[in-house]
Amino acid sequence: MLSRVKKARLFSASGQIFGVALRLEADSEATLEDMRYATHLGLDIETGSEQTFFRVAQTGRNAYKLESGGGVLSEGDYEHVLEQFERQLRRYVAFNAPQHVFVHAGTVAYDGRALVLPGPSFSGKTSLVAALVSAGAAYYSDEYAVFDATGLVYPYAKPLAIRLDEGSPVQTQRSADQLGGTSGTEPARLGLVVCSQYRRDGVWRPTQLTPAQTLLELFGHSYGSADRPAQTIGTLRQAITTTTGIKGDRGEAATIAAELLARLSSPPA
Image 1: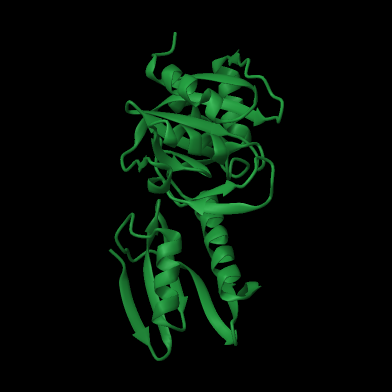
Image 2: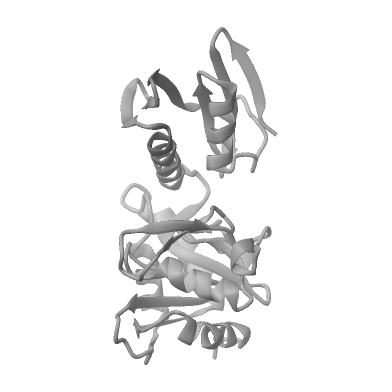
């Protein structure tokens, strides 16, 4: 649980996400609660570790700023600053989690096994995650696959940022419940890695990846790999011992969701 302390006009909350000690600060209790909600804090209890702070403060009528490390990260209206806060904090955790490796990927689980979709922005990860959740998979994340040293994949859920049209920059927020699905709460063993790129006229004819190719696909989208390559490779190598990887262009996400879940239910050859 997080503690809350009021000092003069400053409200604060502290805790950890995947071992990264954080402190949130705001000049109103309502803003602090919005920050807590946006970060999904509460994965770990507060510790005495040195903490990195993020502060949101009002500077005028519907004008706010986001500060961290003695500098201003963003300024704008309330919604914009909170969005930037959530984005900056997620990236900070991804780069600095000491015992976990973060991969830029969509993630779901089905029959107790995780399906990971590594890829860059605009590759269609979120739309495929949404289709998989609608087809019965448990939602883990539309942004990260989080691996521990044993290769287990952990949920790091937030509302899905679904593009109104695949490839479009316009997004809308949807929860797993709104998609008729559920969110996962427990780590799962990796079962399938799918590297896909959405093409409007794409035809799904995936090729099989070797273990080395699967490892490289995950490594190429991992955070902090330049600073700790041995840890990243070791963690990902441990993860892929129970999985296989496939790669190919695809069309609409709904057309392949059932096939992917069927692959996930079948043990790798």
